[in-house]
Image 1: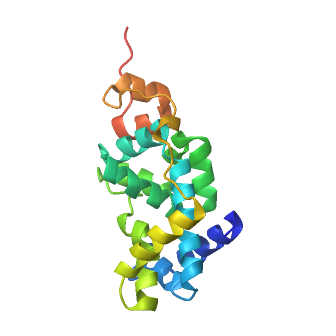
Image 2: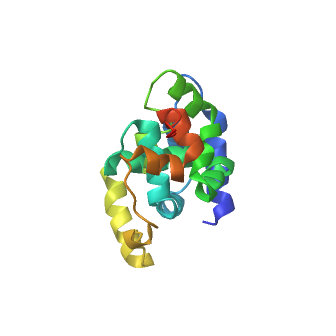
Image 3: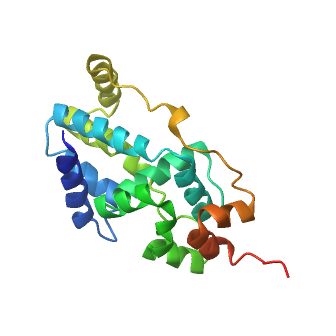
Length: 192
């Protein structure tokens, strides 16, 4: 599956998302109309796109927005970035500080909420769709293991995360993500 097809699937699901149908459910509905092989190819691309933003600067953005961010939460945040669609994803990949302009982040910061952009269920949409086709979601994990082995798919190397820094240092966060830190932490006190 090429990148354009991947993002077309995401955008189709985004357009079907409503107050009663969250993105992950709309995505599973869209994927369930495709073949099992197609769902596996979607998952492969999803993992690649998610892995591409497995970086310290993006994790710092998640940490600010979420008021902290564990390994598992960062996986959910990256899924949430994908759920935003290609334009926002690419904007964040180029400059995570740009999230300070996203309406959901602005609204969450103003209401002191920390759930903006975290979408755990989007991580499992392919498995859910696969299970609808086969009758058992566990079939996906068996098929995925076989697919990975036969296609040489491997996890992203965490050594490529960029420069690590202290997320609990407000001055460091303001230095690296100034607009997002100002939104989430407030303005930094300047000496003198």
